[in-house]
Image 1 (cartoon, rainbow, N blue to C red):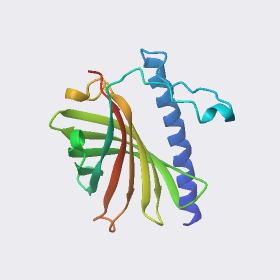
Image 2: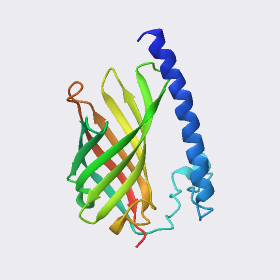
Image 3: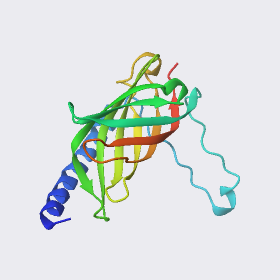
Image 4: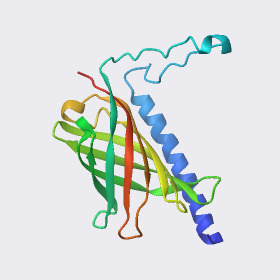
Length: 189
């Protein structure tokens, strides 16, 4: 990668980091529940094997699992896709990417953010995703925090995190991004 691209990418990384910080502060300031962050228990080495994680205050949590096949949509600059083998997540997807990205210590790896809407027969589930993408290997991973206020239908008020792990197939403009989905959805009702 030449120096001009590296400098531009570093600038974008700083801007994205700042935006992520501001968004996180804004979201936590708007949270009606002061206990929205998970509690972490301190434990000794001796007690670690005997300790169990703190129970979730919302007991209506379900494991999420599925396959996501996503492709570039040249009309929107985002991606669209389909989720299969995902039970309640089976449906279509649309992802809108923030144009900024952040370089990591590895010059071949960047981080960026996006909003994904999963449309199912039971409503829409919206996630705010943070991606890590390797340009050389095509491998990528994302963590998507479920947005309880933007989701609809059965997903209204749902919380949790979805994890996406995939590998890029093909070259632009015909790239696709198959991935596996894991995580947990905690339903409000």
